[in-house]
Amino acid sequence: MFKNLFYDLDRIIENDPAARNRLEVFLLYPSVHAILWHRIAHPFYNAKMFFISRLISQLGRFFTGIEIHPGAKIGKGLFIDHGMGVVIGETAEVGDDVTIYHGVTLGGTGKHQGKRHPTVGNNVMIGSGAKVLGPVKIGNNVKVGANAVVLKDIPDNSTAVGIPAKVVKNSKEENVIDMVDFRK
Image (cartoon, rainbow, N blue to C red; front, side):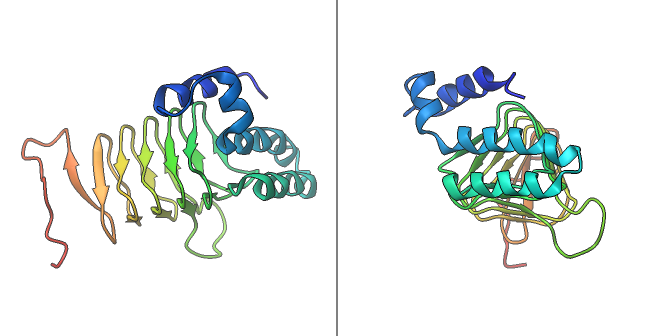
C-alpha cells in the first residue's frame, strides 16, 4: 500500500523548489495526504466494500481539498501541486510521474456505464484549471495548458492548449506548430 511513499516524496522534492526535505513534504503537503487516503480507500473499493472506500475518500477530500475517487488507478510519483479543487473520477487512470496543478478535473461527460474518465500516460503535466473529460487518452510526455478543455485524445510528446484543446506542438512532427489561431 505504501511501497512508493519515498519515491513520491522524493519526486515532490525534485519538482517543487519550495520543498526542503521528506519530513516537511510528508507533514505539510496535501498531495501526499490525498494519495495516502486514496491508497487506503482503493483496496476496499477493489474488495467491493464501496461504502467504506467512499467514506475514506470523503475524509481525504475533507482534509485535503483533493477528491480522488477510490476506484481511480493512480501510478507512482503523482504530484498534485497546490491541489485544492482537484477531482479525479472513478474510472480515471493516472500513470507514473504525473504533475497536476490546482483546479484540474479528470472527469466524465455523462451517466453512461463503463470507462468514462480519462487515461493519463506517464510524465504528463496538467496545468491549473484544466478539464480532461470523458474516456480520452493523454499520451506519455504530454503537457496540457492551464484552463484547457481536453475532449479528444492527445498523442505522445505533445502540448495541448485551448478550449477545446488543440495540439500546438508535437515533437514527432517535422513541421512543429508553434501558434494556433483559435478564432477559426
